[in-house]
Amino acid sequence: MEKKRVDDGVTPRLDRFGFAKQEHNSPERLVRSKSAVEHQREERRLRKWRKMIGVGGSDWKHYVRRKPHVVKRRIRKGIPDCLRGLVWQLISGSRDLLLMNPGVYEQLVIYETSASELDIIRDISRTFPSHVFYQQRHGPGQRSLYNVLKAYSVYDREVGYVQGMGFVAGLLLLYMSEEDAFWLLVALLKGAVHAPMEGLYLEGLPLVQQYMFQFDHLMREYLPKIGEHFTEEMINPSMYASQWFITVFSYSFPFHLALRIWDVFLYEGVKIVFKVGLALLKYCHDDLVKLPFEKLIHYLRNFPDDAMNPDKLLPMAYSFKVSKQLEELKQEYEKINGKVAKSQVRQKQPQSAA
Image (cartoon, rainbow, N blue to C red):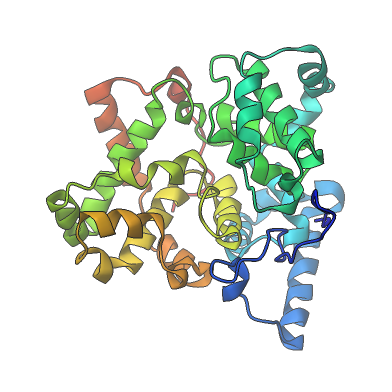
């Protein structure tokens, strides 16, 4: 990613993702310098990925059909950063949407107006404020983010614009063009591959309510001591986990961890958000069962650095097998509350069973 100068003309010290370095909360703290052997290993890994993708993604679908388990394993290890934008488009279904809708994005940006324009403008500066791409007022980053969010608010007027969408679009724009980011947002919210996400942003946040119900039950099943303690302290998932789902961990989590989660999320679906949430609570189990209400709330919004290490946290997350329970809990929730949203009725073919 290009390192752009900010307003005062001084280039700040940046981490490898373009965020201003903060010694006390830098994603780089957990990333040690790489040895020559590790560099060679990364080069081999990159060659494998390029072979798997083909020129411009030409071999991707064929490879996925032939070796889905290899693809899943490599994605879980992390997509090479230089290929992330392309692979995200391929695994999300957004590349197909782009090709089927030539000129649509330009039409939405240039010729349409949105009732959400003032809300979007107000929130732009709050999205990744420490990233060099978004720091310049009315700079290219903020303009691109505005364009994508405005275009989506016109494309889907029922959803329009909700604040959490800015972090999703902002993350995508760090890895792809405006038009590509827009169609990936469409793919996610409309359900090109997995269940639609639009219920996270509809009035009343109906899908958030369902996910909180499901997560609470899973947490009590897998981590009963935490569930019991949270009941005693009157802690419920909406107090700490809503943002996990609304922004897919892009809001307040270290960027290097958020990217690894997004790799898996785009390929396997929302169940990885449940798994990572459970893994976080399990990893911090001994602390969480001791803390009183006020300290619990702070802790659940500020997990310790060692819990944010993807090489520790993600294997723990993958150990949770939740697909069956999630489907059963969804049906239970719908019996109690009715369908979450009309978009949730559509059946989606899952890509993996774990």
